[in-house]
Image 1 (tube, rainbow, N blue to C red):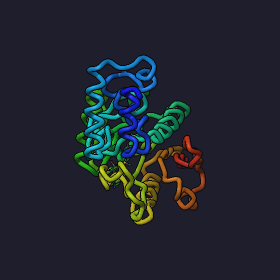
Image 2 (tube, rainbow, N blue to C red; image 1 turned 135 degrees about the vertical axis):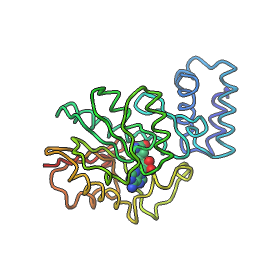
Image 3 (cartoon, protein in one colour; image 1 turned 45 degrees about the vertical axis):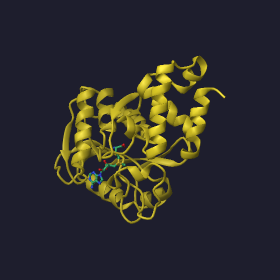
Image 4 (cartoon, rainbow, N blue to C red; image 1 turned 90 degrees about the vertical axis):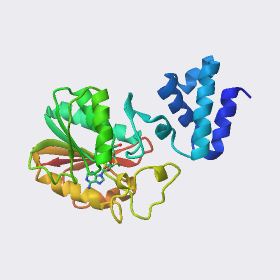
Length: 264
Ligand SMILES: C[S@@+](CC[C@H](N)C(=O)[O-])C[C@H]1O[C@@H](n2cnc3c(N)ncnc32)[C@H](O)[C@@H]1O
């Protein structure tokens, strides 16, 4: 067995997807993918550093993104720490929907609620430099991470510590959000136990914060205006029960994951 394969096998008992984790480390730290490393091999020095990170991952159980202090999202690198959620690939779908909506309706003023590391707000500002972008979070520590990311990506975003949209009288064209949406009894898997609880739990059934956000957004959106939010596929039916003008979009696993609501 070659050394890279041995390393992957050493991680397998501790990880649901060791290939994906090693690919993440290789991309973030050494700028190569696992496919490239397999095809052309990796220099001894890089292999030693990679093994050290994998050993720490096995010993502590911490996600590799927290060990490295960074994560990939929509092709860019973002600073992360234990105060923010690790970006999920499903959230890229929300960003794709937001990009097409901003483009189609020439939207100008948006707010990202529960910005965490800032991935959504910063990605949208990078795609549309003229966009007026506000980003909120209830967590002071998360906003510190988001501010660092905005600085490293050289974008100006108005960060506000706020409970959902309660601090605003403004009228926005678009509210984007990946709110906490787990119910209180949902188990914390392998990685979630390292992530901040405030980023994960959205009330008893997981829907409370999403309902609150939709209600608050109605008075803070122009007409027409849009809400684009990531949702928990398992409670999607209940969430949309009372809504009128909306669409649901499925993720790569065929699960309803992004909700687009039109206001007015
Ligand atoms: C699921 S995380 C999403 C983080 C980031 N937007 C992303 O997609 O990776 C939810 C975020 O909402 C924040 N949050 C939780 N309750 C909030 C509230 N009442 N008002 C504003 N932000 C809140 C958390 O601190 C966390 O950063």
